[in-house]
Image 1 (cartoon, rainbow, N blue to C red):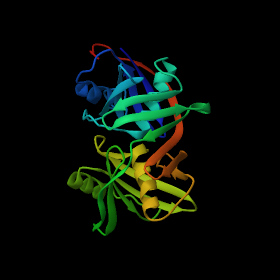
Image 2: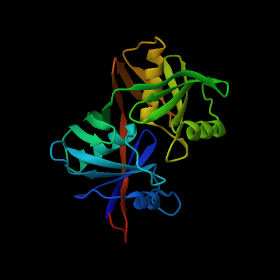
Image 3: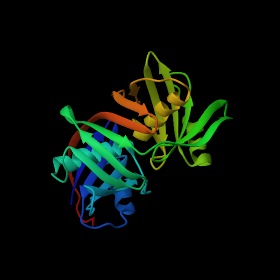
Image 4: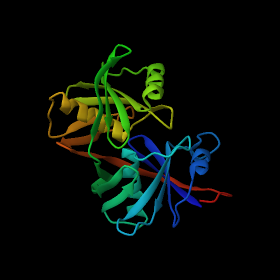
Length: 250
């Protein structure tokens, strides 16, 4: 089986397509291991769908299945286009619902995320103010000083609230975001739904922009548009290469 590796703003994924839907949690855990596997933040399997371009199965690197991953949708879209499974405009099914994507020049991919939901309004914990926002998966967000990140606090908050954890700042019209992700159980270089949750939090605070320029830990440029109940998330995707896996059933 050939796996193809794609990187979206610092999030890397192993992707393949198959005719059948089955439990691939063990494969994800083995293949995403950065020492004994090929290494990735997640594994994505594309499955045929009767009405949409495809359906996906998404697994975190620890083998847990996730309903949604913003950067993963952009990587999956470019993979589907590169492998002639879909055109430049796509609609596909995730655990969070139908996702729409569009591929433009220079491998820029824009995703229309599912409508955001405020799960918990502002509350104070560990000396910070938080909101819990679902942008396909739940995210705790807290606005703080630029560059701030506390790994121990993030891990504690992640397990207490069963959510991803984001610290973000907004200075000089740039939103800087650092994210602790469930399933990876560590800080990642980027998280699409987390960046979207931070941009949405700014609009809740009355900050309106035609679009927000977001910089995750990878320092790549991400553009996010928040329009009432719609979030459009755009950035570059890179095909890294192919991996040949032996002795595994996909």
